[in-house]
Structure formats: structure tokens, C-alpha cells
Amino acid sequence: MRQSNLKRTSLKFRRRYYHRASHIELIRGGKQFFDLLEKLIDEARVEIHIQYYICEADETGNTIMNALIRAAKRNVAVFFVLDAYGSSKLPELSHKKMIDAGINFKWFRPVISMGNMEFGRRMHHKAVAIDEQVSLVTGVNIANRYNDINGEKAWLDFALLVKGIPAKEVKQRCLQIWEKTYKITGKWRKFRLPIMSDSIQSHNALVKVSVNDWLRGRNEIYTGYRNAFQKAEKEIQIVGGYFLPGRNMRRKLREASKRGVNISVILTRVSDVMFAKSAEKYLYNWMFQNDIKIYEWQQTVMHGKVAVVDQTWSTVGSYNLNYLSNFESIELNMEIIDNGFSRKLSELLSQISREECTLIDKDEFYRHYSFMVKLQNRFSYWIARTLMRVLSVFTKKPSPN
Image (tube, rainbow, N blue to C red; front, side, top):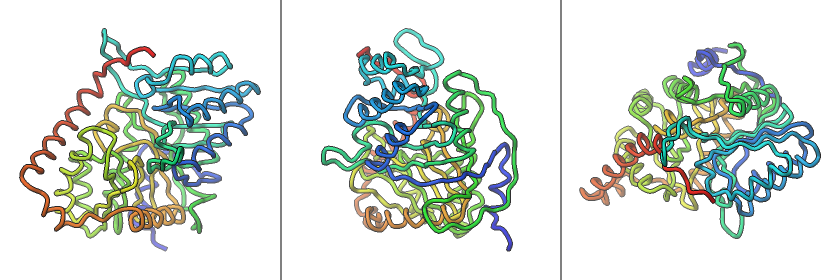
């Protein structure tokens, strides 16, 4: 049977290293994610690599940190890296307690410090690798707001559980961060298409561990998105936390729409970042002009970073479609080529759109889109883009705890 354009192209991305995973499974954020993470830590026998942007000393954070301490006390080698800015609220007592328990702990700090300013990139990825056999790649940080706890529903987010060779690659990436070595290893491989599967899990998928680290010359996640959008034939579904795609990515989406590709995005109704939602709304007009369906997640903050193209290619991880993820942050995603997995993920996103989101009506939107609202959104968009370019590079150091 003739392969689709996307399938043929996906397997030939330059410098892309796809490997067959023995098992992949999509995990929705919230209680089930943290229950799984704690379980994996408790089952670890040899070593744990865990790297996060945000970890806070609340109920969720203490549960995970205590699990890591238990692992260290049974002689599991635990390597824990936190971004110094993202986790600046973590008390000194918390990381001292982990170090005293035998955990190998490091802060990821910027390249250059000048007085009260820091220059360099942020470690925004969220990755776990255990015993070279199991890995988690996600957008879910370690804090109560990402969990179903105290009667509050978790922010919408997703993770990918992967077993097999890709788990070893996640460990290798974690070691690169830990040891500050960034040599790219591996061989480019071509594969036949994977077999069909009938659930949100798969036991024979092709998986690529993709990195964005612009300072080190790696823009694999961006390239994966761009190529997938460029080769899309039928459908593109995006879960867009902090959705502010640049001109090149918007051009790929516009061209796909002109080819007759159905495009939909799930965005948040409310944002935790100042100016972010108004800046997103500035792009609503552009999306309507290009026949892109907009769904707003109503219940909490929508924090996910997921995409599915033609129910064949999908990506899950920490990368946002914006300037910050593309040029300033270290990001980690899993790209999956598997018909069954991607089809089930596509169906899940469609279900979330129908049952848990509101479809934004074009006519209703324009009825309330006054000149002042348009001006406000445009200003917010300009502010957000400027802050991503400037404040992400020069960031005030957090005060000591």
C-alpha cells in the first residue's frame, strides 16, 4: 500500500534517530501522573535521572522528593537537576535534605552571571529516566497546581511513558545536562512503517527523542513541527500552551489550510502569565482568516504541548510553539510515528474539544472585537514577544530563600 506523504517524509528527517519502543503510553496530567511517577521511583533498582523546570515544596513536591529520598536510602543512584530560576521558590532546607539523604543534586544555572542579572538559557524540559528501561517526557511540573489535590483540578497537560531504546536516549540526554557535555551520538535509521495498534498504548512504535537547545545548535523539535505541518494532508491538531507561533510556523499552518487541511487548536481560557492570553487573542483574527478552529479549555489553565498530524505523527513534551521555547529554553519532546497511537491520541483530543472546551464562534468573537480590544491585544502581543526576546535572556536572580 502506498505510504502517505507525511509517513515517507517523517522517516527521512535529517539527523533524526527513530528507534522502536517496546511500549509507549500517553498519561494525562494530574493525580494519575504523580501516582505513576511515585510508583516508578519506588520500583527503581539502579539509578534515577530526574530533571525539572519547577519543583515546589508543597504536598505534591514533598511526595516526589520523599520518594527520591527513599530510593537513595535503598542505594539507588539518584541524579536530580532543577532549573535555578524555575525552582527558585524551593527552600534551601528541601534540597539540603535531599543531599543529606545521598541524592546527587544540581542546579541548572545560566551561562553567565553579571551582578544581579543572569544571561543564558533555561532548562525548561521535564524528563525522567529510570534504570535505562523506563522514561517519562512531559510538560507537567512538580507542584500542586499540576495535580488533582485539595479539591482543585489539575492544569491540563500530558506525558509520555516510554520503555525500550528511547528510554536509554532520555538517560543520555539527562547525562549531557548533568555532565555539561553535548555531543550528538547515534545513527540515522530508516524503518518500515509500524503496525497498527488499537489503543492509546503501543508496543511497536517508532519514537524519536527530540531536543531544542538553540545555543547548542539543536532545533529538532521545531524542525519536526515544521516538517509535519508542511507535509500534512488531512488534519492538524494542536494543544497549545502559551501559543504564540512565529512567522515561519504560521506560514506553514496557512499553507496547510490552503491545501484543505483541517486545523484545530486547543488553547486556554485563562493564563497564569501576564499578557499571555491577550497576546494569544491577537492571533485569533489570523486563525479565523485561515479557517483554523479555536477551542478554549475552560476549567483550569491549559498547560499541554501536544500535536497530531494526519493521525500518523504526534509529539508530546515540554516545547511550546513560541519564541521562548525555540530560542531560549532547553526543551525535550518525544516524536511518535505510529498509526494506532496517533489515531487514539487524535480521538482523545477531539473528545476533549467537544466535551471539555468551548468552540469560539467567529461571528460572536468579532461582535466583541472593538477597536480598543484589538489595540489592547496587539499591545499585549508586542509586549509578550518583546519579553520573550529580552527578559528570557536577562533575568533577575531570585532572592535567596
